[in-house]
Length: 246
Image (cartoon, rainbow, N blue to C red):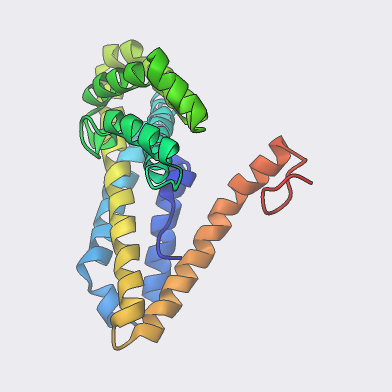
C-alpha cells in the first residue's frame, strides 16, 4: 500500500485518482495534509491536466496519441523494472545476463519516458535496436523478458505510426504535447503526495489519521483499477481472481 501503480491506469483515470485524493483530503480533519506542499501540487497539476485534456478531447486523433504515448511510457518503465529485478537473481547466469541488458536500458539514464516525444522516440529506437540484436535478444529470451522487449517495440511503433500526421496539424500537435506533459506531471504529483502520506502514516504524531487517509485513498484507487482486472478476466476466462489458471 506504499505506492499507487499509475502505470496500470489509462490516461483519463490518472485524473480520477487525483480527484479521489482531493475529495478524501477535503473530507478529512488533517489540516496538515490539506496545507502540505505535496497536496497543493496535486491540486495545481490537476488544473493544468484538466485544461490540457479538455483541448485534447476535441480531437479523437489527439486523444489516441496520448493513449499511445502512455502505453509507450509504461512499456519502457515495465521493461526496465523487469530486467532490473533479475539483476538480483540468485542464479549467477541470470543476474549476469540481466546486468548486461540493464546497461542497455540505462544507457540514457532512468527517465527516458520523461523526455520530449521526439527525443524519447530517438532514444527508444536505439535502445530497442540494441535489445533486439541477436545476442541480446537471445539473452532476453533466456531470462524471460522477451515479452517485455517485444511489447516495448510494439508500443513505440504504434506511437510513431501517426507521428507525421500529428506533426502536420500544428494545433493538434501542440495539444498532444501539452496533454502528455500535464499527465506526466500529475502522475509525479500523485506519487509524491502518496509517498508523503505513507511516510507520515509511519512517523507523524498523527500517524493514525494519516494512515486512515492513506487507506481511504488506496481503497478507492483499487476500485478504479478493478475494471482493468475485469477486462483481463474477460480476455482470459481461465484466470481466477488471483490471476492463476483454474
